[in-house]
Image 1 (cartoon, rainbow, N blue to C red):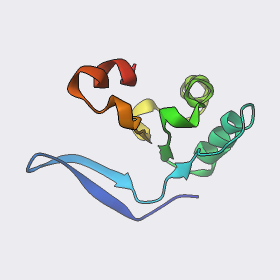
Image 2 (tube, rainbow, N blue to C red):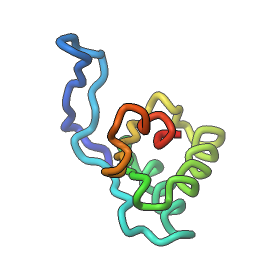
Image 3 (cartoon, rainbow, N blue to C red):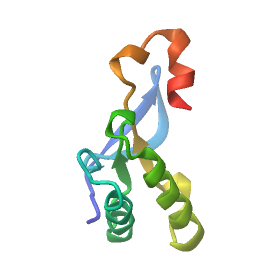
Image 4 (tube, rainbow, N blue to C red):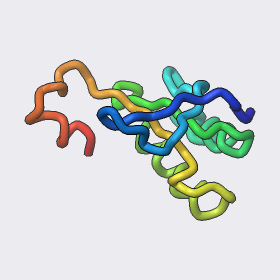
Length: 101
């Protein structure tokens, strides 16, 4: 599913040069062992925005699929937008970096 609607991304007051697809493929409540295949099919179908979060507990499986996609499918890392979210207890400056890793 290719999405023609997108939004310009800005850094401060400057346009970053990127347009993020308005429709992303959600991974919330996707079962372990299923989410990876779902993300793979979504990318093959044309999705270029994948929505993730640490709270979904599926980021490792999705990461493995991304490695496979980037090595075998005609899709590079810079072609995808991967959104994620920090858990509420990780918003303090001193917690952000560790939570993102």
